[in-house]
Amino acid sequence: MTQTIQPQKQGIQLSPNALKHVLMLRERQGKDLCLRVGVRNGGCSGMSYMMDFEEPNNIREDDRVFDYEGFQIVCDPKSMLYLYGLVLDYSDAMIGGGFEFTNPNASQTCGCGKSFGV
Image (tube, rainbow, N blue to C red; front, side):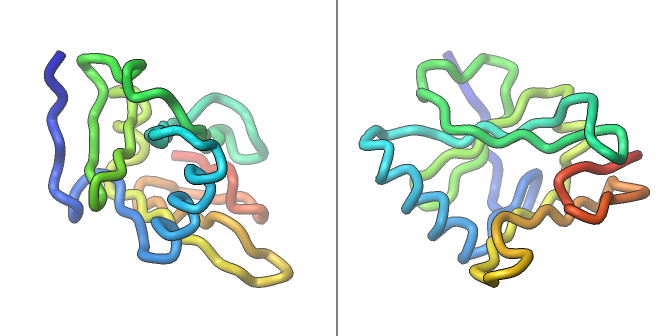
């Protein structure tokens, strides 16, 4: 099975804070997992972001794979249409903290920042 690993400045980008937090969460899982990012229908603005850890052997041939210092982000082709150029950041703020999505393809974003419209 051959995956294409894209340069960091393309596709889905991770801020240093997001990478640090994702690596910490992965370490708690006790396994060498990748992060699958995607979209699904639903949410206040029409589409919702999805993120979850996944076993590397579940990466499909048509998935896009982005490498960050040995950590892989995986995205299916359909979701990639909506997420190309996405920047994933992480904030430690007590109010409004957590993962933040900056999506150049979104024409509208809900107040919580977890869903968008195109």
